[in-house]
Image: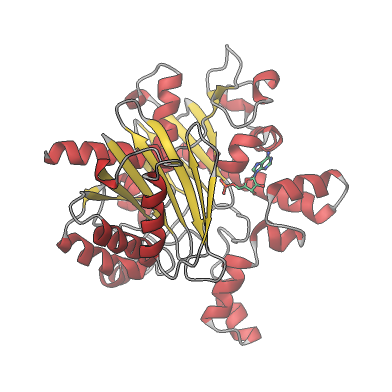
Length: 400
Ligand code: AMP
């Protein structure tokens, strides 16, 4: 069974083709600048050289058509024809309250997804465009939607409600949703596997630390709380996003500076975070370098970031009534031993000790706590695409 995973953004599209008999990646790639001058497709077939296609791609349909051409091309392809693709799994950021699981797409479902789109106006519409384009090109191929929010739908109301008038929850569905769910699910399950433990007996905090960052408490395999909220702006300090702050700052800025909603939104999403504090970069590699050269605001940005992650780990351990493992993933979490160590400083009272030698690794699975540690520390590189492919396989097989 071959499954194509598609992650469509407004002007970009990532894809991976899996052979699900052994979960091997046959090819992956990225299309950039869809609808913009300079469109480019970078196709990476397994075991062959990468192939670059530079041609105008006015819309997602043209882009996906070129992806299918590359996948089935006699020299750079990995299949003979797109007909070999059993199903397509689409990543969708927001599934609202309705979707606590991945779903097989039908006409009605796509209509319903349109309704959820208002909760994620930047993210869901491009994914829907990707779905429509794929359906036009592969009308007989089953498609699924896998949501970033689904894994968090197990939260209790006490964790997901905001203390606003209840009517706003009823009328506008304003509540915590949480994001990066596919990643938190994958790394928590993988952590249990690596520790040869049953996830249903474990209390795990998963830290997805990248350009966008979030922490989740996973108790007995289910998300009980997560740091992102109604939108992916909440929680941790991020590359350019504020994370949590006093909401009155918004009304202060509007009243005192005369800024409108759009200006404040732009400030909080694009100009804040470690970029806003450091004035240097949103990229943690740049900040680590600048801080090591004595740049104080970069060091402050890093310290603020580490401190907030540490607070969330503590909060979720308290919410779960214990802690068995802390898992790090995504760009920074997987690749920066310095960040992991700084975050964990002061949390040793939970009952762990860092094995410095094992922690020195980058980008691979490792248990980096010492043998005797009561609480285990792990790095698990995330694999949202594989999770999407697995869900898609399951849904298609259940339907057959
Ligand atoms: P992601 O959003 O998961 O792709 O993560 C991107 C973030 O990970 C960027 O801020 C990068 O600076 C950071 N990152 C990637 N590799 C490293 C590394 N070797 N050391 C520190 N940070 C890294």
